[in-house]
Length: 81
Image: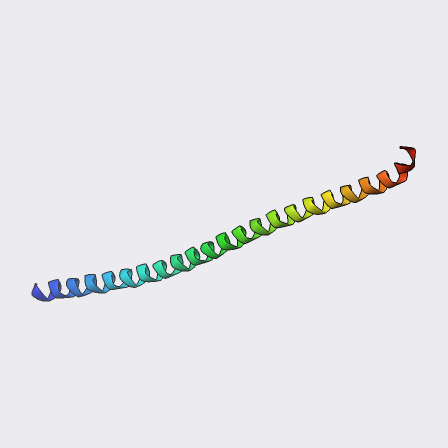
């Protein structure tokens, strides 16, 4: 009887150790996924900043083009004043 209890305890211990190893591996995989998500969030943040800067540059360029066009038109019609 004592031998059976010892074998069951050993089996239970081995099973729990296997579960612990699997849990540690799952934790490692989840941490890797979390790290990837953090990197992706950083990339998205940088991309948004880039888009905002690009939008501001485009607006500045459009304003400059409009200003140049208005000056050109003003110079064409300056003789009529």
